[in-house]
Amino acid sequence: MKFFADTAEISEIRELAETGLLDGVTTNPSLIHKSGRDFLEVVGEIASVVGGPVSAEVVALDYEGMMREAEVLRKIAGNIAIKVPLTPAGLHACKSLTGDGTMVNVTLCFSAAQALLAAKAGATFISPFVGRHDDVGFDGMQLIADIRMIYDNYDYATQILVASVRHPMHVVEAAKIGADVMTAPPKIIWQLFKHPLTESGIASFLKDWESTGQAIV
Ligand code: E4P
Image (tube, rainbow, N blue to C red; front, side, top):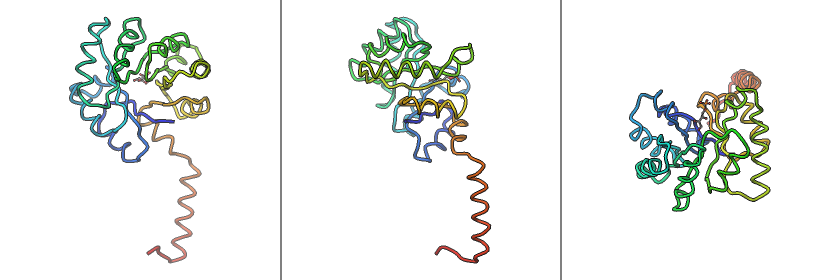
């Protein structure tokens, strides 16, 4: 499973990239707003730190506007994935952009029918928002399972990018289902490392090691 960081905070991205486990980054207009940074500048900086796909979202709602913005965004770096909303215009732009080799992340997916349309439009990634889906009383993980089944039925190459991840169990459940990618805030990615038995185990091994009086040299 690929791990993307869902943030526009460059320091957090650098820190995660040092683990060697970071495969990409997703941003959205709200995350750019939170960063307080210039959109094009921060996306360029992120794309120079992370070798994998960096999603940058268009804000136009019409096809021509999306294509104009995509043209600006894809010039930033070779690893930019253009993020488009799951609308008829967004899927039209998706088809045109992927047709000439640009990566496209179709965002704001909340149904299996929408995910099917995105695959037909040749999306590189489909982003079902599991947390927001759970929030309104639906089962986000059932959505991931349904999309997995549909994509496997037809051998669609579109990668399932689980988004709106709220806790480590979202990641585990998505991995069990076979989602290709998950994107999560850095805090949640760091939580994946943690287990109290790992921490207490290290403490007791170190204590016993000190008692041996030895050193590894
Ligand atoms: C995905 O690309 C989105 O940026 C993100 O996962 C949205 O998550 P939220 O529901 O926590 O805002």
